Length: 130
Image 1 (tube, rainbow, N blue to C red):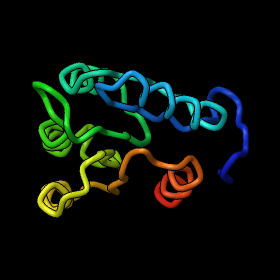
Image 2 (image 1 turned 60 degrees about the horizontal axis):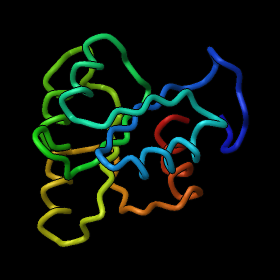
Image 3 (image 1 turned 90 degrees about the vertical axis):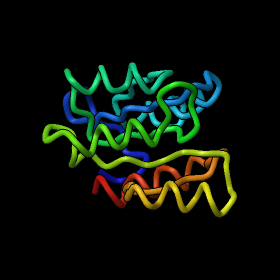
């Protein structure tokens, strides 16, 4: 799918966005809704529950969330046969070397620093989704 190309219903890739910040969720939905089917979830625990029923094509996952953080969610995703091949991009406002190392040690498909520009986000997703 070309960046910015609008597809209809069933043709759209499904993107799950998990972030505890409602503003971030709305912004990312705005960026993606034209080209993708988008599901918004505001907690890690709810995301894990969602993934027992649905299999998105890609997950945008906030790294720092209360209770069930992004690292715990990614470990759960990677531990299950049904979800282990879903590409996951960490989203975080943290730019310190320790946080970046912790994120990359979990082998996500990508790592994006918030706030992420629409063009950069779409380009990274296109690399993975094709």
